[in-house]
Length: 455
Image 1: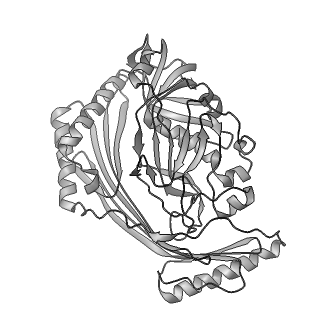
Image 2: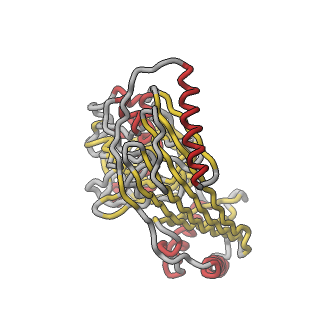
Image 3: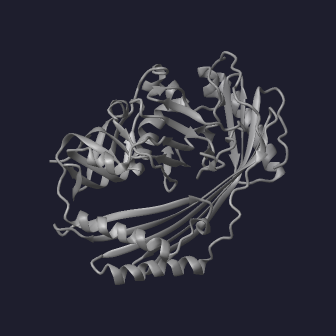
């Protein structure tokens, strides 16, 4: 993108050129039912002046369009100022300069991807004749953002991710359909996911085994129980129940965390971080080196040994709270304004082994997969559980029917008495907060107390 022409007479300005490309293929029982590629892009500008923001966007990227949106953003900020004067606010954040180019792997061809999906379907028909349906979904997504800021920032952000979803359906003992989903995801494209039948067959076998158990599932006993959350579910808990209340805009909006910095809100076994781009020396699935405001992205320590330490922030929210800007302001498309959003959020591993954590439970449940979840700024949450097993005398027992796990994240995290030493990352879903967002979740398994729905 050409250098931003800074409008005169404003406190701060930024511009972003943003293109999003997606490809999605769906095969149902051997029939290709969707093969869609989409692309959208444009340019946007934001101006901060007199305490008010002005934003404008247009689905074009030529020089005239850039000039137009800058002028419109200035006009919009001026229009907002009619609501009254505000105290001067100096925005936080530095001016990042650099380029992040993303994957360079060759793309998987149409033929290769369809042949792989056909091979999965054929394998399931032969190996698992009890299935009533098999679906395979391949998804790729690419974000390319160029930015320029009036304080000297400029750069290119590129994020690519790919996912494969394996979905099996069979008939339960009550005659109703029973379904389970397994997903594989990575940064980059489908080539980087390194899909092959040699890699997929163990995943298909494991998924079918769980489906067979779920066909004979029994209801959970409702009430408070000792539970072991799989790494997948622990990542979801970190994101939904504790991540959102640690976003600075929600803190300013009254989230319960606002008055808890420096206080014990979890077991001392819990440390939780929103990582910018790397963990243990390796680049993560959603690497953000600079956010969409041109601020250098840094790790945000949220909980350290059970103590709430800080929040994720944008330029404005950092200034209003008097904290550093962490580079968490992100927008999903060119027509979206940047909001405080998570990047790669995880509870860090502990020292226990998962099998020992299960062995230490006399009576409880091992929760493995979730289909959906919700939480609010009080850290209250409820997740739908699609795969779980009883634990009796330290051993896994029968699968249970779909249920829910709920509670307050702070209360639940205070009961954690074991954290596993493994780490799971995934980037196959979206975070919803006024606009979708690509994020990754991580975590080990954790053992705690929580409320399960059931009989």
